[in-house]
Image (cartoon, rainbow, N blue to C red; front, side, top):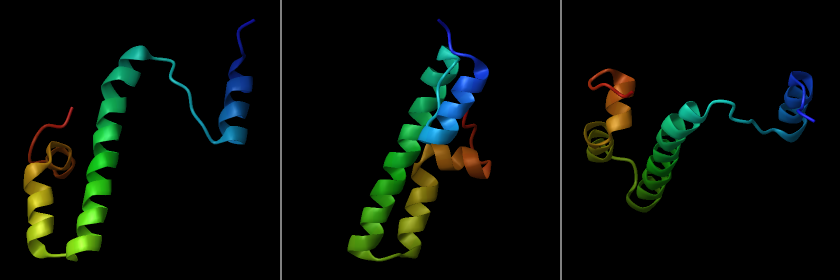
Length: 77
């Protein structure tokens, strides 16, 4: 039997999770979220190892497509 919307919302709230109802959304945006996560992990490691510097931030802003889209210098989606 299919779960009701209320049951799904309850699952999200009680288990701190979410579900995909749209395969196109899942395929398109999950990759963007993964890239963002990996970029932030690399940045964190670089800051921990090298310290925060102007060059580090410049490279991050200039070399990452998702950031260019976020700041409006390139189209993200």
